[in-house]
Each structure stands twice: as C-alpha cells, then as structure tokens.
Length: 322
Image (cartoon, rainbow, N blue to C red; front, side, top):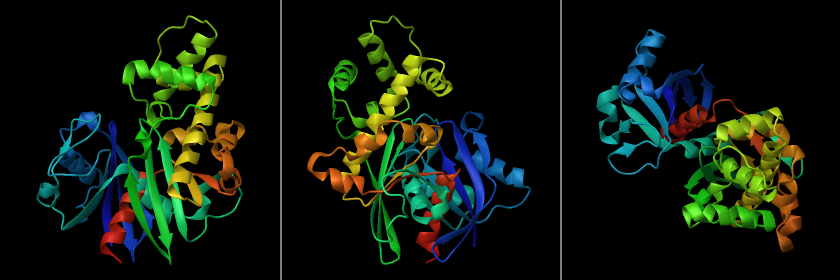
C-alpha cells in the first residue's frame, strides 16, 4: 500500500511517498524538503506537499517528530508547530497513521535497511548477527539513543533517553571539560559533550589549556573549521569529540548487552572518514575487564540518506501490514 512518510525536525519537514507491504518498506520516493518557518503548521505543509505532487495524497501517514510522543498535544523542539494526535485523521484526511519519535524512526530504519547501507567503523568487519541487541546512537542537536531487539526474524525498537546519562571523564583534559560544563549545567550529561553543540566546550577547554585567547564562536563555525582542516585547535577538538563518542557508545553498548552498534545522524555522516582515523575505536573498547568482549562488537555507520523517512514508513508497515 502507498503511504505518506514525514520526518519533522526543528528546521525542516521532509515528505515522501512510500510503498509498504508485509511489515517492510518496499520503496521510498524522492523526498520533498520544506522549511518549517515558512508554514503555519503541519496541516498547511501537508497540503503543500500534495500541491507539489499535483494529486490527492494517500489516506495513510507515517509521522516522525523531533519530540517525545505523549499526551494530546505535542510541541516540537526548535519548531513552533503543534501537533494534536487526536485531530490528525480529521485534519489530514487520513484513515490511519503512526506517530513516532524521530530517533525511534532511526531505530526502525536500522532494523530494515539492507546491509549495504552500513559503513564499517571498527570491531570485526562482519554483518550484524540476526539475533540480539543493536545499540543505536546519533549525535546531532542532542544525543539520540535507541535499542533494536532482534529475535527469530522479528524486531522491536526501544526508544530511550540514554543521551542523558552522566558523562564520565577519562583523563585530565576531560576533567577540565566537565569542570567547565558544570558551571553552566551543574549535572553534565553525555549529550553536553557528544552532540553538535558539545564541540564548543571542547574547543574552549583546549584553548584554556594552551592559554589562547579566542573569540566566542558557535558550534557550526567550529565544525566547519575542523572539517576543512583550517584551524588546528578545531581539528584537535574534533579528535577529542570522536574519542568521547567512542567512549559513550561503548558505555551504552555495555549497558544494553549489545552485540552490534550503529552510529546514526547527519553529524556522524560528516565525520565518517575521521571517526575511523581517530581514537574512537580505542575508547570504545577500553572497558577494563570487558575489553575483549567490546573489541568483538562490530560498529557501523548507517549511510541511508533519509533514515527518518524510511524508518517512519517502516513503523507504519510494522503496525498495519504484518
């Protein structure tokens, strides 16, 4: 059956037609990206997508949103839109829909995309086992974390708030980093370091160590300078970020009892070449008595260009077409 798949973030809302059958995504059409600031709400963006296609939209929707899914009113992060689940059928003229957290959708994509959509980062270069737990984590505006439990050909995605566990400093530099962050946040969670904005505190901490006076710049500028290689301090901050990502991903995998780990998100894609050259792998495996076990876990990056759209469609397929 044909459905509309939607991935709504803070800045953009992406729409695509998808074909689903027997619990799986058969195909995902070309996405259309709309700026949320240019539309009064979800309903008008939905109508704009229909106008773009020049046809009536299917009466089924799969909706991933950057927000916890609870209650009768959902207010999106960094987005003025408000979604009221009890009114979705009436407002969008659909007969059925699923509403899923955006990182839950990423977990659904991890469960269904082909093995060719994964890039090996570290650990044994082998396919994920058919049964067991995959830990999925994605640094972006925050740090998304999910689990995918697979058994006997079926799977279940578990959304978590794992990005909010305490950040554990592992050396003197990270002790200074946590000290800096504690002045602003009191409690320093993993996503204060291992997320896009986290690069700022790392950069400023490194500058303090070298007694440099630096201008206040935002995370986007630091990432651009690091990826271009034009600022050695920014490159050093990126190296440290990758090390911390490895440590946090390893902690999560150990806590989940995972036999595979997936790094997701646009920032992960931008760092894909650098992660493999950084200290990510060493930090991932450095878990004391469990080092041998950690070194045996394959860690991969999901490279599908639209995991949110694909995963939303997968969630619908699991709900309505099995």
